[in-house]
Image 1 (cartoon, rainbow, N blue to C red):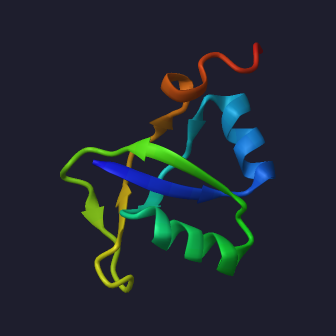
Image 2 (tube, rainbow, N blue to C red):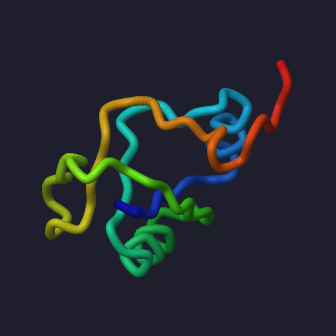
Length: 84
């Protein structure tokens, strides 16, 4: 399933340095919902991610948000960004 994850610049830089996003990784099912959430929270960057079809529903968001409880690797999107 394709989902959209909102993240700020500082957290994205840290995630790129580590190579992954720490769990829980929350995301929206539509880009319109992600844009709305981005404006509300000030998280200016929206990443398009691939979640498994059995991702868990996040309660209280009208069924439009999902999450996974595992580390999400960014290497498949950005490659090896930083070398440690």
